[in-house]
Length: 312
Ligand SMILES: NC(=O)c1ccc[n+]([C@@H]2O[C@H](COP(=O)([O-])OP(=O)(O)OC[C@H]3O[C@@H](n4cnc5c(N)ncnc54)[C@H](OP(=O)(O)O)[C@@H]3O)[C@@H](O)[C@H]2O)c1
Image 1 (cartoon, rainbow, N blue to C red):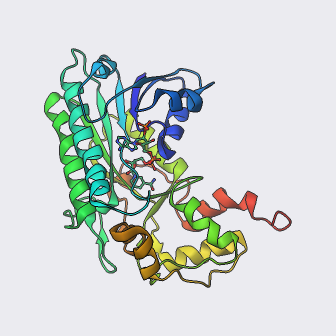
Image 2: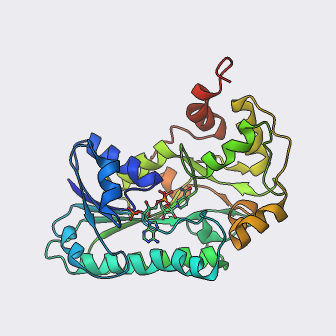
């Protein structure tokens, strides 16, 4: 297959590109910085990259012509410092306007891709300490819920073009980069503990399960609509940190007070101070099997080789 990928240089994107290449697919990565992509993808077979302007039409539209599938991961990172009004606008535009442009590009193809796998996030549901959310639940009403709702609505445009659409609402992705990498440092220094009250829900997915789910969504023609990309066993932040500490053989004793995070991240602190309990009901109904269904197995797989006795 020939697969076009946006956000290909990111934490998830790099792994998706590698997995596609490993199984023999041709990958076209649409990237904002071809120089960065050249370094990242040097030596990865069957991968080419093309500079593009995510929020504006351009020559890059032609890259979509005749592609078999599109995997759309691009978006301004949420955790890059304080949420200023400008950053919030870019968090929104990079996803909503970026997706509208991608749909425009697909509309202009003579031979359209058969499937678009588009990203969303569990922020779609808003936050709650008590509710459980499955795919049919309505959107929440905070800033991220609005971003996710409009992001998904923009992707829906391809269904009118006869293109199969799969939207994956990602939970917090556990892997070498992203949230886990940020959480590790205090634990490494024996200063780890839950963020805020610790009572907020933490719905997560192991990076390998996510990549397998994305590829499954490309391949399974029966998959259509919204699926939660979260492991079947979400847990509260304090429990997650306790297991993290156990696997790392470090204590979990020093909570990071909410005001400290609010000072550092502004409104963006809500991403870690508040959470939602999300279950992958439709995802499991497809027969998809999670290799890492609970936090203990996931963290042991990701961290154990680095934190066994003698390696400290
Ligand atoms: N990681 C998680 O825990 C998590 C959880 C929920 C949802 N998600 C969503 O999943 C997607 C992939 O996540 P990730 O962790 O791989 O993200 P990431 O590492 O931040 O990478 C995202 C990619 O998007 C592109 N990008 C960054 N800023 C952009 C902007 N302003 N406009 C257009 N493109 C931009 C970049 O690719 P180029 O520079 O090559 O263009 C970047 O490599 C993101 O949309 C993210 O919001 C992630």
